[in-house]
Image 1 (spheres, rainbow, N blue to C red):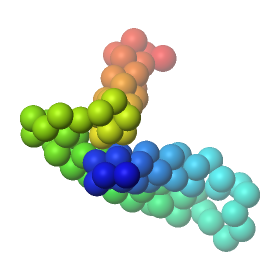
Image 2: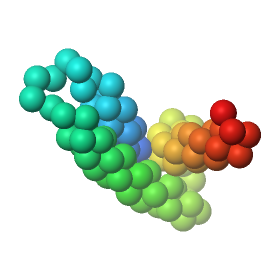
Image 3: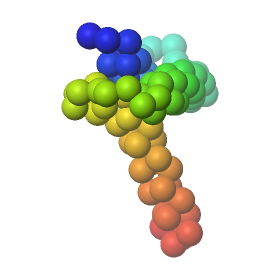
Length: 94
């Protein structure tokens, strides 16, 4: 595995960890909803930083194979799609 694949996988891991930490609030004793939100936001921030780093390093003009391109660029694309969905839902009032 090269460094771009590792960065992409780390980004996906932290994004999914943020999603999971927000979903298991009822299952973890001692966690308040505020704790779950803070943990989720920290995981999302770390995942976004890794996604931006992987995306910017994948654009340097080097020839990359398919899985490396996918793992380096997919996390940022997923974040952009989720933001677009939230924006459209807010604009339509749903």
